[in-house]
Amino acid sequence: MQKPKRILIACPTCALNPNPQEWLMSLLSIINQVRALGFEYACLFPYREQWFVANNFIFDTAFENKFDYILRIDDDIHQVPLNAVQKLVDANKAVIGAAYPNRRFPYMVQAVNRTTPDSLIDICVNNKMVLKPVTQGKDDGEVLKCDLIGFGMTLIRLADFKYISRPFFKFEANVPDDTCFAQLCLDNGIQQYVHIGVQLAHAHVTFANNGFLFNADVLRPKLVEKKENDETATTKC
Image 1 (tube, rainbow, N blue to C red):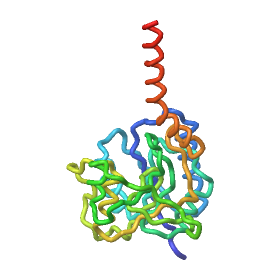
Image 2: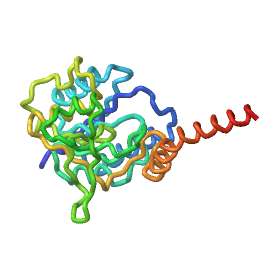
Image 3: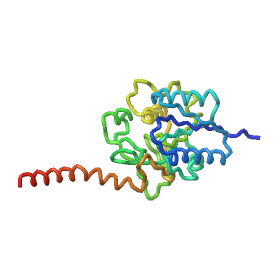
Image 4: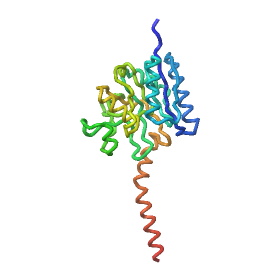
């Protein structure tokens, strides 16, 4: 009889989202989906650790305990679809994540490609070089290649990282953890993917409102300037 696959559900938590109707319900949904697939699982929640410490602890724990996968999630994602885990597993990729919007302007999907393919991804992020969001062509499926996938909900197949020296996350890496991991993948020829068919909400931003938020942030400076000009004109009168 074949042994069931083992998955470590890992979430470095900083209590970013205090609403249990969002983060807790999403976590319970993920656990139920993992159970339905017949996986053995465990949960790991490093609490308020520096990001490189938390992520190294997650990967070390997964390798030492012979897990097959890490399902790396953030504590401010919610609205997880009921088939999310199934879709990520069925894609059969080394690294594949869900699609979700950034919680800050310009609220683009956290799956991007470099505009200059030879650039280091960490330099692109630090120098605010243009990173273009992944786009889905009419003939594309739901699984798309990307240079960087956010860690909101990402399935990582550990066999592909078995022979890469650890720690994966370095203290001196002055970038977010998903950016550091993306560079690790690029350096070792591991392709990352986003599953456009798995869409999440991120904090207060959803795919239903990110366009409105973008427009509001673009218009806000103009409205403030108009208000100040109107007040100045009224004062002069």
